[in-house]
Length: 419
View 1 (cartoon, rainbow, N blue to C red):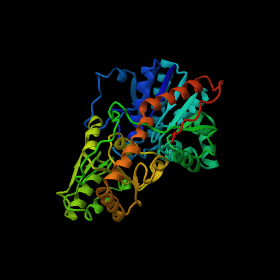
View 2: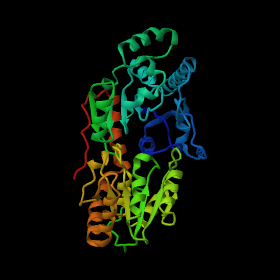
View 3: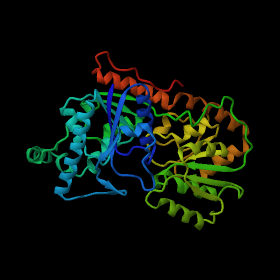
View 4: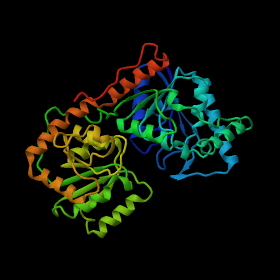
């Protein structure tokens, strides 16, 4: 098939798991014989260069303008908004005329021109949405152009009046009725229904994300490691991630305990957390850093426990699965989409989000009970075998094929966890 993919950030310029999942799926679809082209944001992450040696990059069009610059939401005047919309529509038209896609794969649209989706709907191009966060709910608020013409009846009337002169879409159609939606979790599907302007998604399924198995090879038998009080956090430095709670918990743990925190900087949060650790006289026990993707397995294997302290309902959460693949016990809040695969006392231990006391108690319980650690590890090893990027790409391959055929043979079967 010929597949056009539209998304915001795309590796190596990326910030989280959403973009990595898109990359993993698209590279596999291309490997499976499909012709894939990606149309994405033209911005670059500081210090990250384009990979000319990567053949897949030849099919990436980094042409779109977004309404976010350096983490700040743009509020340009009307003429600049119109210029952005016209630019993005031209980029979309070039891509459509160049590839003539049989199906368009829509990923992260936050702060992008949602009017591109209007164009695709009007062209009657089959659409498959890979929804890994709640952009269907917040997307209009980040799109400075669409926000002017969507919402109230009067805004929509204004949009219809403006469109002929503007020459670009203004009012969004009922997107929920225009495509197939693959949600990363049941939570994400529910939140999208509750918060988006569209009352229902006529065709939808849940497709759990997966880890890159080549980076986390199967272990077979669970490893037996002596307890050394080495705690690990992997993820963004974000106020919602519960890292401050984790640092507070360190004050209640033995002095020989140490904490490694690996993640990308976000809005000065890392500097704030470093200062916070020093204020608690924990600076010598808490280490901050950043790891590349291929370095994660060694970090997990070197830790006694992976802490996943998230305090917000994030859509999924791959980090616990990566830790399980390395035979590392997981201590987590189970908030958000991770609740759909984390089982307290079975493949992890859970603690109350935002409670440093419970977090410290969970660590101490693991330290005292090697049998518990082995039980959690043994059970946890089953999950990464099922949630892989290969399986993820297989599911998306089926959905894109079915959409290109306009589901004449019916919908692909739902694929959930087998245990």
